[in-house]
Length: 130
Image (cartoon, rainbow, N blue to C red; front, side, top):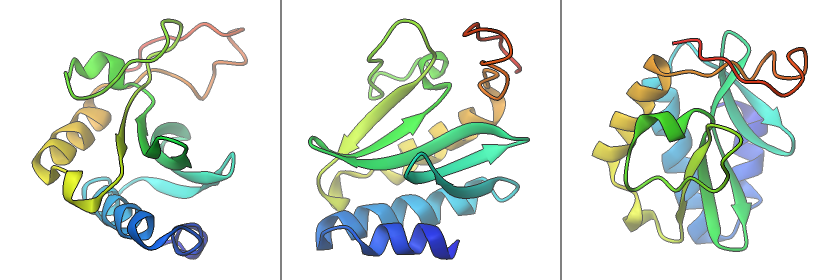
């Protein structure tokens, strides 16, 4: 695991550490080709410089966010806004993580991508890559 991500995870409460460690291990397992780093203060995985998935500590729990998750058409993922293609799910216990769902979402994250890498260049307009 990336030492920066490990440090982020270790800074969380005991239960949140467990959640973060499971998420990081599963993401690393299924997105082996992805670069990962702390980006905007939380762990994010990128494919070809495009953000794909990340997680962060929020009031509602650990938020697992897929940048293109709206296009996954998965009922368990919440779409919060209408402008972008992101969708997320919150976890408050490691027992809430459904590994099968997570594997499906990570596979979709590879297959369905919107171009966030060039969003500034396109003045906020998203284009689908895959």
